[in-house]
Length: 162
Length: 162
Image 1: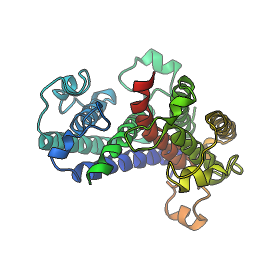
Image 2: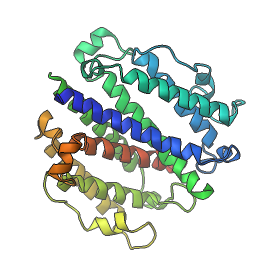
Image 3: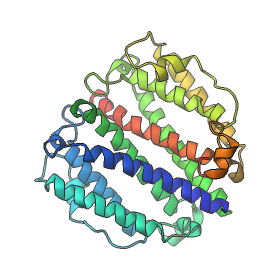
Image 4: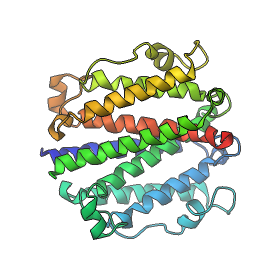
C-alpha cells in the first residue's frame, strides 16, 4: 500500500471507531434517557445527538460530496443552543444520525488518497495553494476530534444511566 | 509535497491544535480551580491534567522515541482512579505536561512520513504484517482523540470558573 493510501486508511479507521463508539452509546439509551444533561445546566443528550448529526451532515458539501441530507437540523442544533427550540423525537434524530453517517462512509469510499488531499470547499483555490494542509483529510480529522470531544461529555451522563 | 508527507503534516497539525487548546485552558485556571470536578462526582481537573500527561508520556516508548519522562505518574493517573491517592501540586504537573509535550514535538519532527507508517512498539512485527494500519500514525490520531475526549469534559467545568 502506498504511504498516502495507508495514511488515509488510518484516518478513516479512526473516524469509524469514534462513530461506532457513539452508535453503541446511543443504542443503549431509552428515549427518556436522552433528556439527561451531561452536567448540571449543560446540553442534554438529545441535543448532542442532533448537534453531532448536523455537524457531520455539513461535511458532505464541505468535502464536495453532495448536499446535506438534513439541513433542517442546522438551526436547531448548530446556530441555537439547547433548550431554546422544540426538538424532533429521539427516534427521528437517531434515524438522521445513521443516514448521515452511512452516506458519509459510502462517499468516503469513493475518494482516492490523492483526492483526500485536495482542498475542502469551505476555502478558496488561492488559499489552498498557500496552505495545502487545509484539505479534506484535515476536515475528517477535525470532525473526528469534534465527535470525541462530545463523546467525553456524553459518557459523563451515561455512566449514571446504564 | 508528497502525499504521505502531506497526510502526516495534517495529522500533526491536528495534534498541535488540541495540545494548544488544552494549554490555553490550563493556563487560565488558578491552582485552586484545579480541584473542581468536571461533573458532580467525576474526575477533578487536576486528575485529568495528570492523566493526559501520563498517557501522552507513554507515547514515547510506544512510538519508539525514547523512555517516559515521568513514569511515576502512571500509578496515580492511569491505573488508579481520582480521589484515591495524594496527587502532586498543580504547578509540578503543569511542568510535566509541558515537558512531555515539548519532548514529543521535538521527537515527532525527526520522523519522516514513512517512519510514521512503521509499526508502533506495543505490537509485534508479525501482527504489523497482518495489519499495517496499526502504525505510529494510528497512535498519534488515537491520542489526539483521547485529548479531545477529555477536553470536552474539562470545558464543562471551565465555563463555570472563568
